[in-house]
Image (cartoon, rainbow, N blue to C red):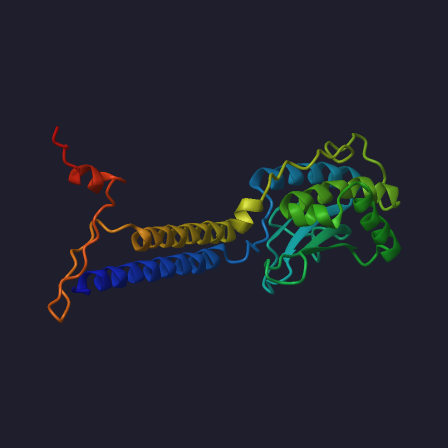
Length: 276
């Protein structure tokens, strides 16, 4: 009997299995490339956050005679800061600015690492000032930011919001450190910081590539199980009919088994009635 068709079917099934494996592997690689181990971009403050902060710092600077500003830096970007701002305006720094002989500035240096790295994301917060301001007073202002809830974790979670919030805290902390006189009017939003917005869960965003790979492997395992079950059923299925016995080479006929007869059937057939 010819085995061409079964062999062709097995070859086709093997090609289908290997093609499926190749597609799954390609999908996993593509997912890993697109996922890129998580986003490491440091987000700058939003436009409304910068505008509100500039307005608050302008009022505080006019009443206290001290300039205030902020600076956001990406630790792994050795170029210019991501964003600067002050009471002089958005994008205008107070450091070494002739318009501000006395100034205080908060600098947030943020570093994001990929998920494959053993290191953790970090934030370095520093308060600097003009040469006439004592370093101990600047250190007190820096510690005050942490006391008011602006910790390193907050800067890591939302650096743009945190750096502008820290900037509008500077007038209040400068008064505590004795660097400026209290303002005639209270500084809005500086004394009562609003809570951080709900960032939500980034589980799927950071791990969608791995989840896609897991689903692909599960589908591949289901395909293997299905192919194995189908092949097993084909090999163990009963034959459709038994082929008749062929005569032996010697020409003698093979013995044919006949069904067993009912007990006593031969005796009943050989009996004859006795003559009267």
